[in-house]
Length: 156
Image 1 (cartoon, rainbow, N blue to C red):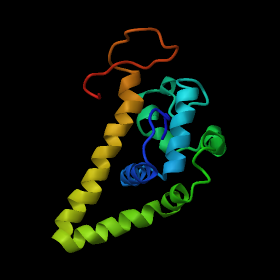
Image 2 (cartoon, rainbow, N blue to C red; image 1 turned 180 degrees about the horizontal axis):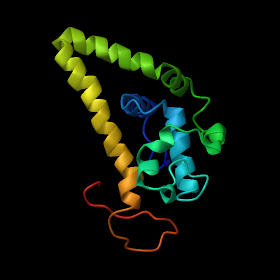
Image 3 (cartoon, rainbow, N blue to C red; image 1 turned 120 degrees about the horizontal axis):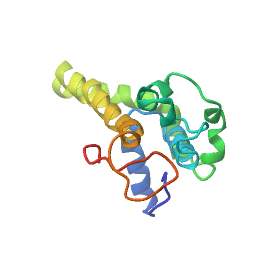
């Protein structure tokens, strides 16, 4: 969806987007908009997680402070913003997490909730954030790209 790199039947697209929503990194419309803005403005001032502001900014601090580009994400998501499934997932991302937590609680008690929600989310967050931070600080470059992105084997 984000890169428009392949097409799949709608039911499979919706299933994959639902699974992506389980990462608890925002709704799919916001996530796609932020990601597309990052690629358009990579390592420049409008980039939501501009690595020129330092490792910690691109790793996590960018989530704390609103950036002007975030107010204009709609222009990056015109192809999906009107889709009712995307809108539902965008509006109900937190409720989906709560429902998953209830299911896990019923299946295996609090240990399932801790491992299936909290530990999973923290792990997935840092894996994703390392793509924003580490792959713009560590690694090697096989060609000039115009930004600070690198090939970082331990993040890939």
